[in-house]
Image 1 (cartoon, helix red, strand yellow):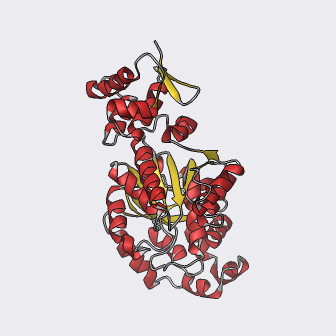
Image 2: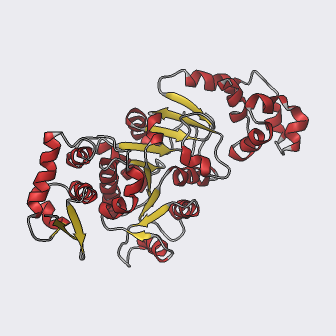
Image 3: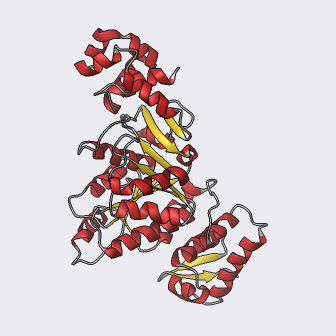
Length: 371
């Protein structure tokens, strides 16, 4: 089955996820869908401009897309393709195709979405970067939407930790929106993955972003919301995640901060309150089994030890933290002070030691060594 056949469907104006899925479900394959002709397309509710494009085998948009695919690390991922992300296939309807730039292997790893306000407070930006870095250091793919504010900070945190990140875009991948994130998008394409269901040339439009948010929620095992007003796209993403059976976490804030109100509403609705990365990692540890991928940094070295216990340097990191705990309960803040490590490195290493049965969490947020 050729890329040209898939692209004739994907590039037809008006044929997006819903109608594309309808065509594939009805006819089975792109060649069969293309052979259905005007009467078959009309019966499925395909609009006239799309029917005209489907009938034209030499659509210039298809030729342009094929040239785009010739570039290094440019991909068209279609349903049934081994690279197609399994979690997305659970959506109804699932996007029949995805455009991608970068490392598609990232689609095989457990992922967490970090979303929030486009106009966050400085504290919100710092939290998004810290959680992005810590969760990426722990081996998760950090997924967000390349928007201003929390999205960009989450991507930047993951990149700073030399971790994995995916940006799901609300435009064609030959466009960057917002334009101010051109360099960030280039870094993500180089170190991570850009992903979109939209055909090349698709400009930003209000209706695109709920679809983008749906893919963000569908890709991930969990979603973390950092600062959101009561009426925001981030809350929509969180509710989509919840509806898809994914975990939802929310960062609490001051009752005087309007951007904390959306998070507080999510917590009232059943989202899990989060104060540290350990709260998230403890909840989703099961989905990470067998998926750990080494990255740089103290937390990453400790995480890699979980898979390679013979590595002396990494074992030293575990031993150092165990010695810092001593023989009395110690809190994360105590261990940060004793080791000089960042809080995310301490939290990630504590999680691994707990999974190995070498420490136990005690009431009050402290940790104790197992003799």
